[in-house]
Amino acid sequence: MSKQYRKTYMEVYLDKIQQNYRTIKECAPGKEVIPVVKADAYGMGAKQVVSYLIGEGHDLFAVATLEEALEIRLLNDTVDVFVMGLINSSDLHTASKKNIVFTVPNEDLYHAVASFDGPLRFHLKIDTGMNRLGFKDYHRAYELMNDLSKRPHLRLEGLFTHLATSDSDESFAQIQIRRFRDFVLKAPFIPPMVHVSNSSAAIKFEKDLDYTTHSRVGISLFGETLEKNLDILDPVFKVKSHIIDIKELKKGDMVGYDLTYEAQEDERIAILPIGYADGVTRKNQGGHVSLNGLKYPIVGRVCMDQMFIKVDETVRKNDIVVLVGDALTPVNEMANRQETIPHEILCQFSKRVPRLYMTNRK
Ligand SMILES: Cc1ncc(COP(=O)(O)O)c(C=O)c1O
Image 1 (cartoon, rainbow, N blue to C red):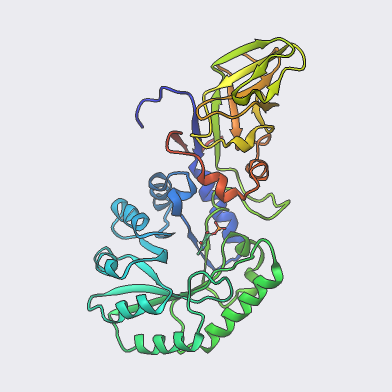
Image 2 (cartoon, rainbow, N blue to C red):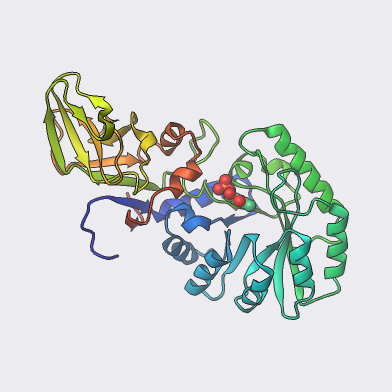
């Protein structure tokens, strides 16, 4: 990593990702877990996360785009990389040449695949109710499968669907699970991989998914889940900064853009070199950070590069502050403040925040 001039960074505990993988795998013994490492491994850094996981023996990864797949291919020639999003028909030659497994979710891409004369590896995506990608006409999907079975250079390796409500509406998730089971059971043949689950489903619904072979798991590898009161995963990262200055305020002094905070008495306000350009959004005003095992409130507007916390007499310049990721600053709390889900919190830390990788942390 290049020299770090500003003490604002994200610590990433790579071994905890592998630990979470083991935990999720225990939820469905016998089923394979595909690490989903799209969006730069949910902000943790795909290059480092994937290299680490390859070192741990993983040989299959899922991403969203062909760019992300090619980034992994640069790291390793042999692992399987599966693109879950839609690739362009004009990029089939790249998928073929680089041995990338991709998704066929519609007729247009299917026709391009059917007329391609090189080897291709892909999964068919079935829409069971989310109305995003995937074939809604199951009979048509069977016709395509029959057609494919006559073309050995076109390898249909998997069938999959995606759940719209795995964490929010169990009854709809079960409807999708049943629809996909019917689809699979009536299919002209069953390819080697059949998959439905994301993290929430892998944790909760595997008993209903005995007809599947794999789960595609992202957020839980990175220590988070949308399942409330579930404490089986290890946190994987912390965002830290430090105190660069402390202002002694008099009662009535005001703080930051728009002067939204007014000292109610003589107070100490500390300045941190981290702001919304790093990923601590303005919605975090009113939240808190952790410092020396205590919570301190975020006051005033969060600026682009700096922010303010109200501190007591014990706090000193250079003290380290945790913005998110420890027991006092859990990711789901930041997500609640921002009215979003943990996925978005992990993805929001910008490239300006260096990632420091650690393994075997005690
Ligand atoms: C198609 C698909 N499968 C699996 C996942 C992984 O989901 P999660 O991060 O909730 O495990 C995603 C993520 O959005 C996805 O889009």
